[in-house]
Length: 119
Image (cartoon, rainbow, N blue to C red; front, top):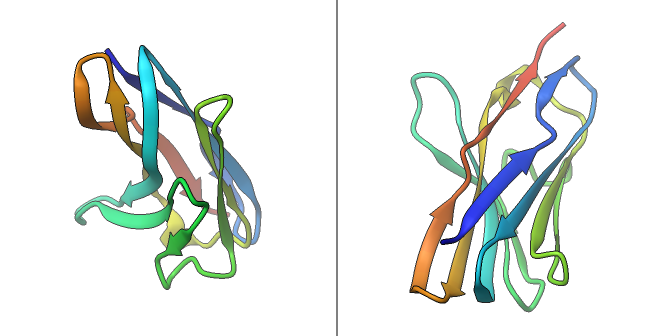
């Protein structure tokens, strides 16, 4: 069974930075696109950033120039460096990965990590 575990969330002041990490475990043969999504209270889950196996990245307009997604294929991990954080970035952040494992292809989610931007 594949599991994704996020870490790195917390409380930060406006203008501050946080780095989220997500590590995958299980009998994994390959991982295609990995990404981060977020869900604020009362809102739908939205894409933040994705990174494909060819390192092609995609960002939501609201985070371009402030957030950077990266991955480490050897560690089966994906990261999100978040700079110049604003209160509107407050949300639960979820890691996502398209995985080929011993049970076949699947789209997996982490449990989420809370990011709160407040003074």
